[in-house]
Image (cartoon, rainbow, N blue to C red):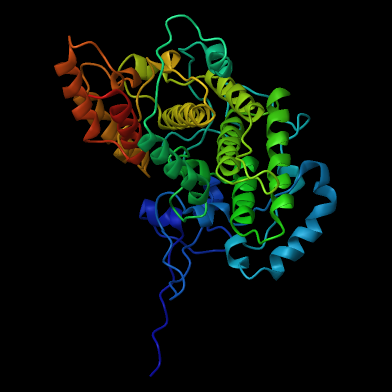
Length: 432
């Protein structure tokens, strides 16, 4: 019996917009005209689930075509990496292209000078469902030097610091959650909840995240005897990311990608015993460098001005602000975990108290601009008494506790797994 010929599918961008697609390859005419990233769903097979055809592309689609390249060795490694990918049993994941050395960030590269108002992604289109991260509107409302110097609190605490003490159950809970974050990079459509899906849907993936995917795959696929070379490769990339941050060679979008990648690498190292010493190798220098990264992204803005005036910000600025805050909150909790397991004191993040708590799941996961704008208008109506702040999850005097509980309950009805994790940790650590 003959099988039916499958009907050709529109590309993901046209499918999302519900318009006709001429299905040209590698980019259809509509995507070519609008300079969109054109991608097509893979055909269904018994071995692999269907990929999405609308909204943001899956992480497999977004990461396809990138592999790790060390800038110092880019000119000599292209052909070798292309050969290894071509011979891989998993070539369908990586695609057929290798990241060009021209795409790697160096201090001398044009357009890579840091500018808090520019994301280096081309002209902004405020009607497209593909975010364009230029002309970002972000401000810094906290003391970023306290973020940068957070590691000092364990040795010379500032006045009036409120200590924390994680119960053993919370230490185990946080460890289990954070241990999964790097692996989530390999799951199509499910990046770690600190990385917004749109960060993976840009025409050119930021090099730090492209390298991170390749290194996570290498880390997860290492065989006995290769542990040292795999670890050294990860540490080498961490050193490169930090050195470029010191040189201030990142544009804003690449900077946050570098911070997120560095955080994921630190988690990988921490939860993997050193082959030579049998101890988690996430040392204090790694944490100091991570917090310097955190101070830098904080200095370039964590809040949209519209959030402070209780109006709706533009989608792109809100995405960046939210991803920055989530990454920063994860960094603080990870540092608490490291301090706890090393017998060092750790404290409430007073410097972050006034920042917004993680936003509703429907906002974070919105794949279309009109959906996000509609839901944000609803969000503004529900929080007419002021947005929910991070400090509202912390212990408070009995006075006002009832009102605070109502606001916490209202927030809990809408959050995703990241917000739930923050709530669980604070509830069990501090009580209701």
